[in-house]
Amino acid sequence: MNRRNLLKSLSLLPLAGAAAITVNPNEATAQKKKKSQWTPKKQVIRKSNSGGNTNPTVTATKGPPASVLSGCIRSGHLLFVSGIGGWYPERRAEPGDIKVQIKSILDTLKEVLEGAGSSMGNALRVHMTVVEPNTNIALLNEAYRGYFPDPPPVRSYTGTSADLMGRDGVLVQLDCIAYVD
Image 1: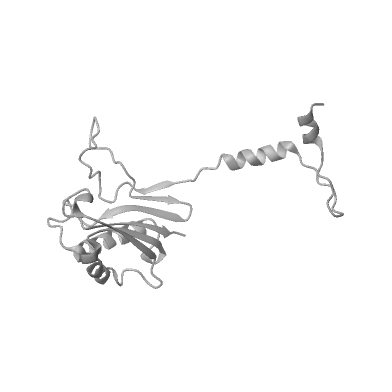
Image 2: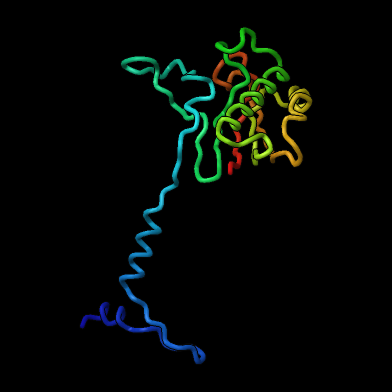
């Protein structure tokens, strides 16, 4: 018997009076295999928060442009909502100020969460990218207040400049993680 097989066949020695425990190598391998094969289950709830692909540089060869993102994905009891921009020209003619844009975002977020069987009360985390936060965060907070019941979700933001938002006129973008029963 080679050394490897000999070691596999040995049982653990009793420690401090405990009974010997035998390890079945086939069982251990099966358990290890099960763990390594796990992958998260995900279900697309909404294709895109903008209603389609808003990136003009991405085009499909046939038909409409292919979506480059999912608007909302469910995995287990969690919903992951991708970035919702404050202004989409196909929805509203003028971009408006930060208050108009955050209200538009939060109305869309409410629609997405409720469509997935959740609610604003189940929002766990909100992250925003805000243009010129030193100028806009106070106005944003005015409009944001009251959309989430107590306790509100945890929130963070990243400041940026207008030219980095991907499209002229967008002042804020928001993404969210929420719970669903």
